[in-house]
Image (cartoon, rainbow, N blue to C red; front, side, top):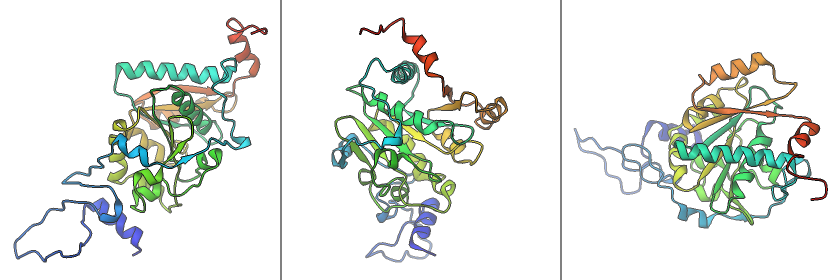
Length: 292
């Protein structure tokens, strides 16, 4: 069995890694594990897993320049006259209002099928949230099957999420901070053969529980609901789920099936992607004139 698979098995079953100087327990003596594997970098866990994350860890995160790829379609959220950007600011405002009414820090963004705009929505929502001065935002690429966030921001894919969960790096080492804004990126990391098995580990659940201690918002891009079980699993761990559909493409049947797969639990709403520019322009001509 490989070192990584052995780390996965031991972490999942709560088996401590052998340490130098360990003594063989006497007959009848039962020893409970006090720590997770040393190489996991996850910290104390007795008996449940604890990550002990804190905001001070973010000071060690490497900084990368904001250089989005030309094909990324990232919005210029500093331009108040750009109507698509205004839509994401509206979505941000509604989520921030919901946060005042209920515990809401971790959000899964998914879609029924591929090519419906889930990544576009997740990335631009994270950018919109990060433009609030006091708001620290984590954008996590949890689509371990077809990760793309690292390409959009033109950063290295590794180290990232999978490397952290398998103990190959610490949490700060898996992150990147975008220069000039409070946006932290968690790329997918090294390729894995079974993403669902990795995301089902207790370390992933503990990560969702600890993130509200260090960031105000954690937004996760995940695989489509009807093509894998990853998003369904992650939706049970997050505080809320946003479903992205594409106008003129997503069928009503697929929306129904996606909602049923989520059991309608913690569904915050549906984002309609692909509206015509004329529809968006007419919505905001009341507020902005051509001379402004």
